Structures are given as C-alpha cells and as structure tokens.
Image 1 (cartoon, rainbow, N blue to C red):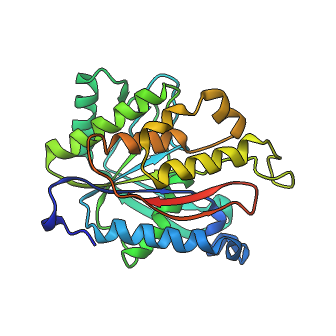
Image 2: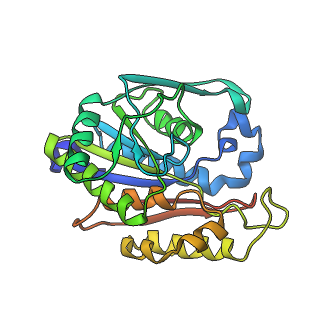
Length: 274
C-alpha cells in the first residue's frame, strides 16, 4: 500500500463509493447480506485510504448542503453525527475538520473564480452520505479516525465547474504539502427495477453500465458526455461527486480498479479505487 514517505504530497488516492444506510449491519439487520460484494468492495476501498496514511480526507457528499450557484465547504473545527434516524442510535461519529485546508481552499477557489466557500447555514450534523463511508473507514483504522476531514457539497453548476473545483482541491493539497485522499460518495441510478422504491426507467440500467465502464477505466473525460437530461432520467445521485473527484487527478496518471457493482434493491451501488 502507499506510504506517505514513498510519494510526494498531494492527492494520494481516491475512492468512489455508495452510501446505502442498510449496508451498516446495525441498520440492515441481515438485509446487508444481499449486497456482500459491495461490502467487500467498500472494505477494500477503505483499506486503501487507511493504508495511504493521509493527513486529510476530502469527502464529497451529495447530501451535504446543496446550493444552485456555489459549492458549500463545511465550516468549523469539528462535527459529529450518527445513524439514529435509520434506527442505529449507537453508531456515532466525531471528526475534526481541517480548517487550514478549508481556509486555503476558499482562497484558491476565489482566485480561480469558482464560487465555493463556507457561506450559508452551518449544518447541525454529518449527513449519511458522509457517515456511511466513515463507518467503513473507521473500521479500517481500528475504530478511530486519526486524520482530519474536509466535507464538500455539490452544486447546480455545470459538470465543467465541478471538475474545475476538483482541480482546485488538488492544487490546494499540493500547495500545502499535505497527503490527501478523496472519497466521492454517490449512489448510481435509483430506477433500476419496477419493484424498486423508485420504479424503472430504461435510462437507469444504461447509466449504471456506462458509468461503471467510464470509472473502471478512469476515462474521466467521458463524464462530460452524460447529458443533464439523461442523468435526470436515470435518477443518479453521484455523478457530480465523481466529476469533482476526477478533477482532483487532472494531469496525473491514474490506475483505476473496479471492485464491485450491485443493484438488487433497485438502486445502483458501485465501488472503484483510483
């Protein structure tokens, strides 16, 4: 696995992961057995992050604060959360934010004329698109989260702006000389099956097939070939997360590995590492 002393500082690795709460045993209560491949993939992806020994982990969350015209970066020095609303009151999380990284990220975004910052109302707790990945990451680290976290939300801006913001994250990591890993949290299509909670559209399976092919090859330029209408029809969740993550690798040679894909409940779950 990657070690900090063996590589230059900056973006060390990234993972694309879903965030179904039922994957957590305290919530799934046996239902998680139906997505065993996703669990195994999630565990391997988390081991990659933990083994990279990052100082900071950037989590891109579709369920953090969302603004139509800017990217929200969670402010403050720390945050906490739990999975109580899903019935798992004892599954809790406490993280330390990397306020230095956030400060420099805001400044660089301003210089690059990208609308991003800690403006807006501070969220009261961590969202499940953040805590589900943290559940596996915490487990990979033996029950603790030793690094600092930066949590970033999506926006209504174009895919190109999401990619550009990823480049800003990359440049900030390099400027600060920090070892950084990125988690792109996002489910795939929500309309895979007629018996699923959101029904079926033909764009659902088509989206999942295309996005898993693109991400398994790290063919990030092809992310822009997905039209807004197609993504909307496919009822996807994570495309913008994946696009920000892709920007974090701009100009770098990337080794991609697809670890799993499943969709037994009508929602697509894909895991890839980079």
